[in-house]
Image (cartoon, rainbow, N blue to C red; front, side, top):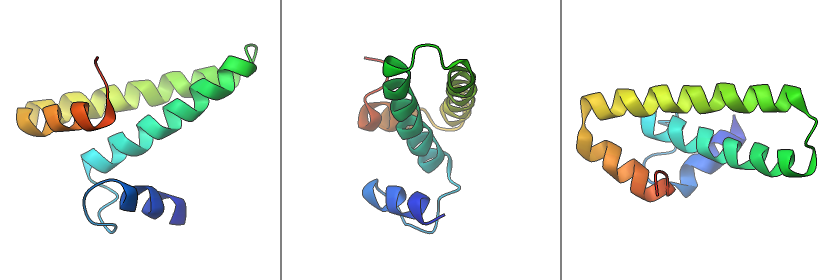
Length: 85
């Protein structure tokens, strides 16, 4: 839990609100980046690859939820995380 709070402090918003969609997407993006780096050196690690695909799906669902609620929030998340270049 402490790691999550530290990651949240780095991004904008309050540290207590780690359950918000924006913070969840940010946390998932950082985990996805770490797993991608791991898979570059461990190409045969299929369990990690499966976990990565699950995380990507969760992030995609959260992004579509945020987009349906507020397009402005969606655009700001995309820009801040550098997604959808």
